[in-house]
Length: 130
Image 1 (spheres, rainbow, N blue to C red):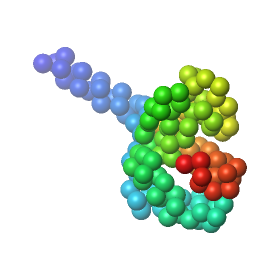
Image 2: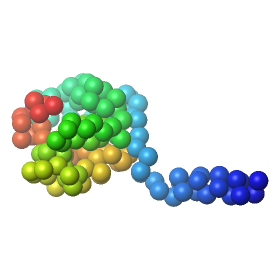
Image 3: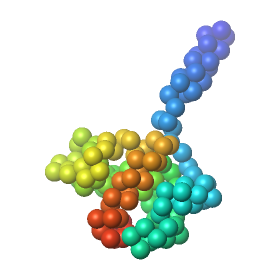
């Protein structure tokens, strides 16, 4: 009985001791505020509504979303692809255009996701890569 109590305490402690590894599902309002605060409205001819639609359909607003597309994979709230934009260490011929590890796109801090998504949109002059 004591060992079960200790194990339960240990699991709770470990869960609290490793922040940012859980991922996060944003509420619509929270993501709208985050996108506005980060200059998405009017960015490369897009609106916050465009980005909300993208995030909803790509990840369900989930920062931990992951999709395996065979030769490459998509990561995070914006489903950023490992072939062109991030390094997952297993995508052949990857270019890592955002100079970031794909695993960084799966945590609850989306600042790096935002920088990368804006770089993608800037280079494409819009959302066509998605």
